[in-house]
Length: 424
Image (cartoon, rainbow, N blue to C red; front, side, top):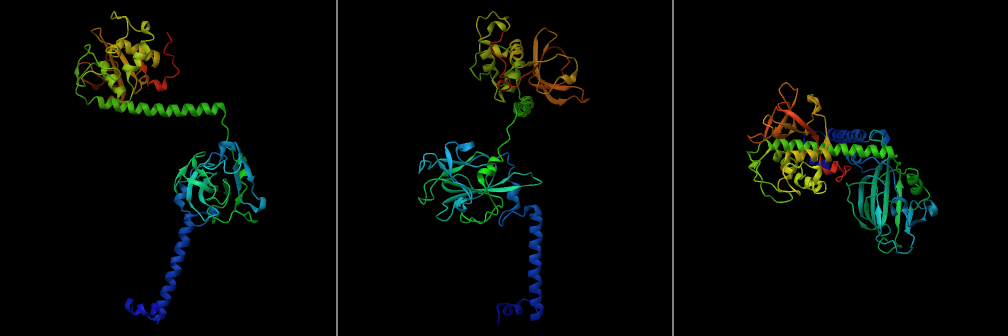
């Protein structure tokens, strides 16, 4: 009696023929489901993918922007190709240091392009430690996958599933435990995830000449205009991030209970401050910027100490004073004009952006200062302002309540490097 015949009576009242038919149908159904899943996972243009690579892994594979050499990056400086592809049926390039022997032992190995690591472990003796990385030189919708294989490594510095960049170190050159003189065995395969193989074969199907491939797929050199454009885009992105942080700090400042106090106080330097429950209109601005790691006490002092006569001389001082200089609105106006951006004091509300700093002359002749927040009035015509006019930090509709004497935009020294501090 077979094992199936033994369990059949316990499972059901089917006859043997019915049970055998049920088993066959179940197996066929299971196979069809697997084929269906495979069909969904791997479209037709994935025909050069070997078994064992998941769709998720391929989806995580970044697009390449060109290929470099794996040693002496980016152009294999001080290395030579000791055994080229196809010589003696070799399926790789063997990269040696120009010193020969084991002089390149422990030298760094770099990923030839952006990709995702699929394999990183010790192989059988003649391979030593091996890393395999998949690269997509096509697009997300029309991928073109190739695989780089790095063998005989002394040290592995990556793990399967890691995304790597072009030129990122992935390990060091080894000698497969003393089997060879130190060198890097580099394969590039057009059929990814093939069995590791032997490294030699007259059949080169699924393999590419590494040097020819890399030379024909080098990173595209950007023009000066493209480099400048990318730099501007990064600066814009960073500036926008800073602005969002500044606005968040301004909104949080409105929740603080502070009694108005503009008196002279001796404070530390840098990052000096009076009691947190005390402060003036200028202290609101100072504390908002401190929340985004910009110390106006320090930044203003760096400028005023070299350009003292440029700043207002209303107080009979003969030298800068770190206790009070940054807490004086007229000094802040000069600072923002010199090291930020002075803008129009137009009566047009849309000219004033969230994050801008505004100064006014009050009816009593005193100076006042505030920072514009992202919230608007109920009629959506004007942005509100964070300020302290005597009742602590508040967000109110005061933009055109008093005579505007200054309108500034300041995002800190990081975004104002081109301005010369000693320019008078």
